[in-house]
Length: 370
Image 1: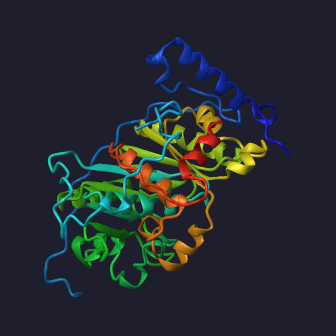
Image 2: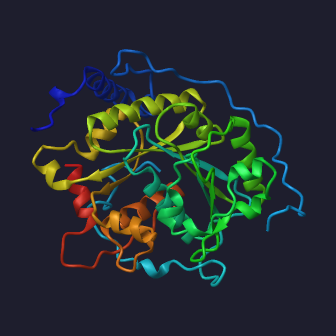
Image 3: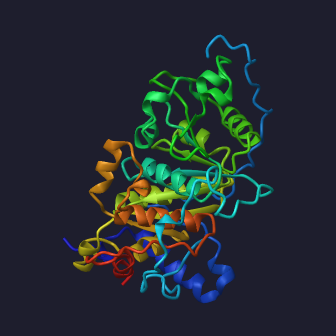
């Protein structure tokens, strides 16, 4: 059945019309997201109480018993394929060819969320973190899903986890003992919240303390893989963040959840929000069986960070514990995730050339916007 705007909820129709009115009023008016009606009929809350930071995390003694939003009109972005080799990335600890990031820059805490499960949050977190680390930044990935951790599997680090954040809070280990450093890129580390399904009263203050302690170790990026849902686990996970990436798919159910999550983020003081549209199928868009990326972005009114095509290589990557962006012959989804990471940190001049006979990724994404 074809997907047309006449079949969408009235609130989505209202939002799209309202967005066009704001754009006609001028760039200032269009840049601020206004209160919108949710599909359930309620009004989204705006502006929540500011989060307060707790005291700095106390570490266990050493004698521990255990050892930019881009528009579709960007000149040449979707129409051309820049011939810049992916091999330009080097390990900053082994080679100094890449310019070192500014150490004085304030550390960034970014939460990857969606509200709905199964849209690709963990895959996005792993590949964004790995891509940013390859650009020379010191990155810490936090799997904030208590008892249902998966980020270690995608990174191939499941056999190296001895301690978790709960062990740190219990005083059983130090923070540096719980941080698992990736052997491929030593400036990327992983911190898991828990090894099992045990319930633990982790509060907002605990999350803030953990992030403060990680930043004190010199990390420049903290990426939080947020649990699914909008319950207390979600609220605790977003509490230390100042930025967010909402992952959604071109399905009306996922879009509704993304709309709700955007409101909760703003209610908790997170206004720097970007949108990543995952599992996009250009052939379905051409047949009018799937909403285009432009349609999704206009309905939500959130700046677009990137679009990730549907790719069976994601399953292979997960089973092997090797992020898409590390594969020797990078698939289309890996190229799109790497480009999203470069936009997230403001490096817009790095593109990967897909020198192969089939249609290029950027040409495919260009069709999604038509």
